[in-house]
Length: 161
Image (cartoon, rainbow, N blue to C red; front, side, top):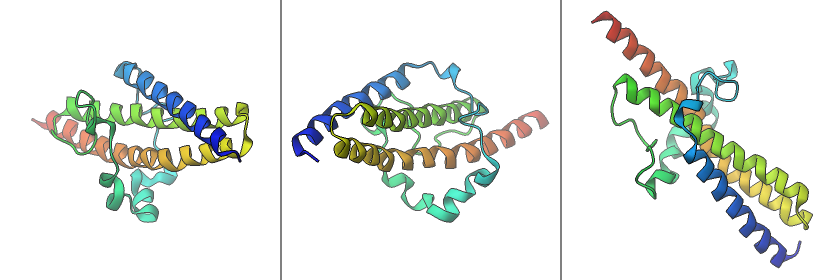
C-alpha cells in the first residue's frame, strides 16, 4: 500500500462522505418512514434489545459525537427533549435520515474501493468507513423502536383523554 495513495484516497473519500451527509440533510423528512424496508425493525432485533445485550450500546452511544453537536441547526438525537407525539414522530424520522446517511457512506466506500487505484488503501478506507459508521447505524436501530414505543404509548394515552 502506497502511503501517498492512501492520503489522496482518504481525502477523496472524506469529500464523498461530506457530500453524502449534505444530501441526507437536504432531503425532506417527509420521504422517510420508519416502516419502510430499510428502516423497519427486524424480528431478531427484539425492539433494539439485541444491541444492548450483545454490544452494550447504552454505555457508549452518548460518547460518540453527533453532527448536531457541530451544526446547531440540525435535529439533535442525543436525547429526547420533549414527549409530545409530533416531536417523537420527527425524532423517529430523523433516526431514519441518520441511518441512511451512514449506510450511504459505507456503500460509497465499497464503490470507491472498486474504482480505487490502490487496492490496499481502498480496502483500508472501506474498513475505516464500516468501523466509523456502523456504530451510528446501531444507535439509530437501537433508539428507533424505543422512540416508537413511547410514541405508541403517547397516542394511546391521548386517545383515552
